[in-house]
Amino acid sequence: MTLKSALQDVKETTLAAVSGLLGKLDYLASLRRAQGRYEHWGIELVHGPESSERALKTAHAEVVVSILRAPLASLVEDLQESSRATGVGAQGYVEGMRERFDELLPGERQDSPAASHLSSVLLALSSLERNRARATRST
Image (cartoon, rainbow, N blue to C red; front, side, top):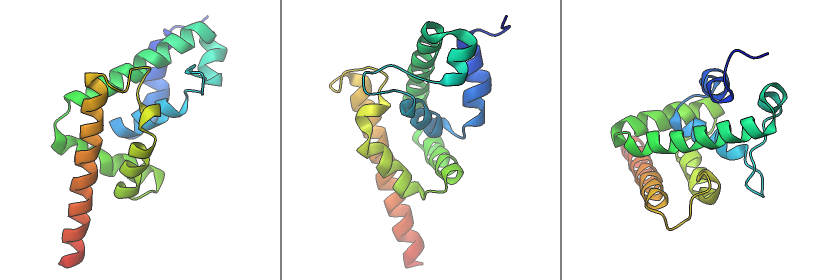
């Protein structure tokens, strides 16, 4: 018998180990398979496939909302934190996310307002990081 709900387990255990909001988004997107179903063997083992699926989908949607509500300045810092944890440079990290944009959305249509907003956020982060890198090289 488990003491935590599947969603609590995802948030308090699984996602707590992932650095940054962007890192959490990237991680959750990686758990979704081609048919749109989320798979995480540990959570499924403890909570069952249906509860696991609901929890991961809910957590994914909540992370997207958190990113969309976050000030851009905090997302710039988050990008540094999230990319540092993977060993990939910030520019490469955000570009990788932009290339896999379809995977980042938790089942939303590509023409939804949330999709447009997230695309704009990633574009802004990419531009800011590119300009920061240029400024660093020129000094």
